[in-house]
Image (cartoon, rainbow, N blue to C red):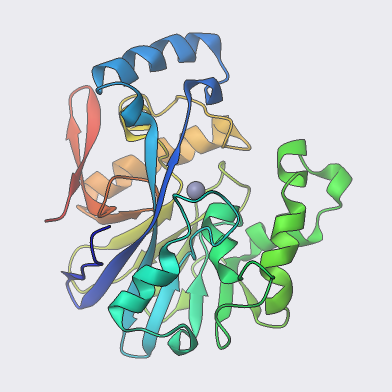
Length: 278
Ligand SMILES: [Zn+2]
């Protein structure tokens, strides 16, 4: 696996940390019409491998200290994942140095690395920042009122967040850290969040799971996948955010786009393309 590389965007230094990769499947496209179109797009994009998603977290090097955006999968998924801790070690930043972790949402490929296999906190000094809408959904909703898909992962949420009790800060829209603001980007989960980071130059946006499979969602943003709890809302968010990124010439830090997971979007007549920074 390549060693982490740091990118300089205005005054911000950011290091993508590749946790590993995971396979999507056309079976995850629920609508038969969409699935036929998706099958075609994946074939055009080179076949099955276009359904493999990288899984990135991001390390920000701020004057106040290092800040992590998402925390990888830890031991909650499979053997091709869970490399965040090794990648972090290669940067020279220690787990105990991290005081803040910004979470895009509460799914296991973003929070799994908060704990070890035994459920102990990996970041002894970190406060977790989560949008208040996301926190309310996962922590305050009676399980019987949750969609089944969300209910099925509650035990993992408890494992990851339990050891951080008292260290979870719910932030309102626009709050976060100095120069970093939470922006609700709902649909994938109710409180799915993009973190918008001022750089002194183009904005940097860590958009979590706004796009899963580039070959599908950058070409046909309306393609639903079962990963999104509310596909129609996820589509509206994706459509608006893709446009915002291009209009603002923003740099995207994307959890599931190809390594290094950081780059620009290009708008062509019939699609968007991800142009990684080099
Ligand atoms: Zn994800």
